[in-house]
Amino acid sequence: MTDAARFRGAFLGAACGDALGYPIEKLSVSRIVHHYGPFGLRTMVRKKDNHRLAIVSDDTQMILATADGLLWSAAKDLDLSEGIYRGYMRWFYSQTGVEPRRGQRTWMRRQPHEKDFCLAREKFMHVSRNPGHTCLTSLANESRGTLKNKLNNSKGSGAVTRVAPIGLFCTGNGPAAFELGIRSAVLTHSSPTAYYAAGAGAALIAWLASGLSLPKSLERVLQLLHQENGADEVVTSLEAAVGQAESRPAGKEIPWSHLDSIRSLGTGSTANEALAIAVYCALAIDDPFDAVIVSANHDGASDTTATMCGAVEGTRFGTKFIPQSWLDCLEAGPVIQAVADKLYETYRENGNTSK
Image 1 (tube, rainbow, N blue to C red):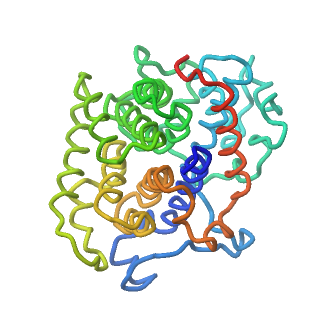
Image 2 (cartoon, one colour):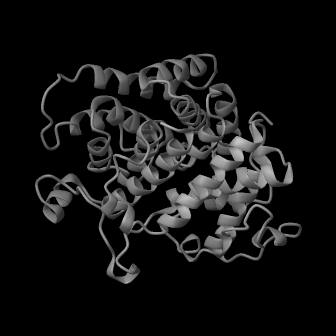
């Protein structure tokens, strides 16, 4: 598989997982069964009031904002974390309608890297899709979050679901992705559990994008985490995910057969739980399409876990596991693909992902 296919797969896999899980993110399993049948929700729900497209949540918006920041960094020769901060502030202003701060007003204009599209002008980036409270309050703070300047103690999953572009941009360089994942996460989430999960997620994508297997990539991610003080919760969650996957007997899948394992890992509302559930589904289920479906059908943060699982499976398998019917009805699908392609072109041209 080409690198370009992995980039597209990660973006579109994440967005499709997000769109699949979004309608059921607040439903219990019993309510999912009541609304969608005994096999759960297995296809994306088209919205009549949204041109019959399946809508994405703030998770996809933030993935695009991360990519926007990386592209901005490359175009303006900025530190990568500075570009990502600008991408997040752009999203913040689009979501809140707050007047940009002094020195940031030009950030809402079309930038040099936006000859073909401008995310700040895309209507779906301005629509409120349950944006994370931690992200909004952190970005509203004029003091920027860093490892030393802690804004909160949030472990929220918003820190990890947005890191796939970082891993892709650092393809093959897990340590660089790990570091940048952490630097991006602390802009909004100050708990070590959140930012180490973000670093782990970015490193996982980086190694998967280089063609390394999922078990081998996880082995390297855990080696990185074991070197860090404060990463215990992330290590415990990932090791539990691996253990749950390894303990499952081989055989034909049945509806809800993974539910107990997913529940044992949490709800996906924290960054370590979201990463662990995504990893479990990718490890335990051979078919990547089924893995994404299972990652959404539980009584936790369905869109969050399916976004992360979609990014993992898309990086591994490209877009070939995603039904064309899903791609055809995905909100902003052409824009999401265009961002993926632009990030790939920039990655190929740039080469240096460690700034």
